[in-house]
Length: 392
Image (tube, rainbow, N blue to C red; front, side):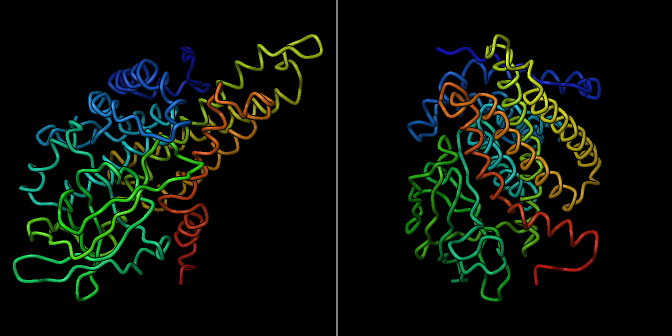
């Protein structure tokens, strides 16, 4: 079994800005990944299966709702701790980080923020422990970047609601126990609904033939006159701002995670360049390879500090949606560029499953699109700095 030799780059000693707790949490996640996930991740991706056996381990390292208060089963950690866990998970594979991101930011977060006390106590402890796995239904077949145009709807039937519609590109849906779904009521107002597996008319067909995120389960959510108890409506926030608030949290985790993928590709390329001999010397001795490696570590370092600062602002409740968008967009683009340069350093070996680079590259092609496309995030920054809305 191939050994995970990963060594995290820290060119500007960012570790000195982290607390001892931050480093303990990160290192625990790193060691667990090396021991439990790295040995199986390539096989999982080749077979296009999500390795469900890792779910208890993800819960143990605090990957499910780390910032959720202890009283609801979470670890009560800060946002930098959350980011560091996501970074370690995506260093291994974006699909594994996606599973944890969805559980934390798109399921536990809205139940905690927008739910009532009964909903928090019913769902959050089981989600934190991994006993329940959740998914998030916003994107529809005809409404991606324009979620406000959704057609999924709920109708008040007196003692319950009837839910109809469909969602697609939903991480975790094939095996999720619950789904936090966003639907319009009769007046066109968007509401959050908790849908439970087993409800009549609720199905979750799996999406196959993916070239990306192959170790993540993706599917649809289909609702055909699903009876929703009134106590399953999230009462404390509605409108489009409610699901977008969840996406802020998820995008923040992605910003950290993408750095992890970039760090892994850089570390792999650096090690390979020192071992690969051509023309009588390691290819690391050639100027063009040094240029690639020097640019990689420069961009990683810039992203590390941008994201750490975002974490500080988020801990202080001062991070804006536009700042989170900028960070997500910058870091995913940075990571994709690094995967491509790293693949070139490895030559033909870079396309094989012996190394993680091509897998990261394929995964990041999804990450650059989901939870706000690359272009949409650019327009969010444009709106923020100009005050002019290019979406309409």
